[in-house]
Image 1 (cartoon, rainbow, N blue to C red):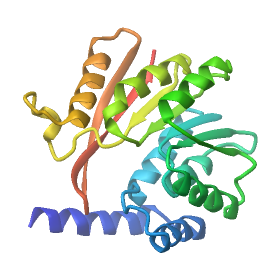
Image 2: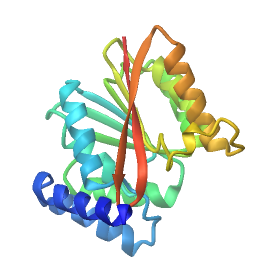
Image 3: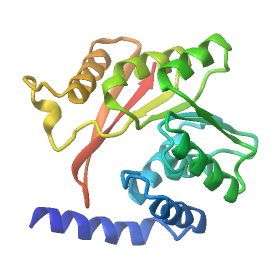
Length: 221
């Protein structure tokens, strides 16, 4: 019963707060046609990311995990005209779909799709002495969340915001005895945030058609 209510409420709120967007709708359709995993964030979560990026005054955004480009479009549309975004995708097929969707939305001039291992790409950006990013969204293989967190910190500045998707995983994150490597990595990131005087963070729990989850939102002091 709870899951049904969550799904119906999500649909209601999305209808009110997320106006139809042909670029986003096209991305979902193309993703389905390409038989990509149906694991993109929801419309409400996209709107949440968009507002967070705008509130942070983001002019430079870095995303880890492009998939079909759905979340990248939400974030790219939050940028000012001279803003720039880098999105990293390890799967070459997914990267092509994402790049096509970004191009179809007329945003190729502000979004760079990098193909390759995310940890290596983050290290490469550090080596390239890339300008600091204002906003980060991490939605990739959670086993490497600690590496991603550390990489993002090296590419951040005071005031930067780092967001991790799937921080709750149906409450599994509270299971300290888990052998699940993805959950263990997320737990470690939470511990690092909790024990650091460089960052501050909180988890926004969410419910919807995909059940109980949440996003970790971290601000660099």
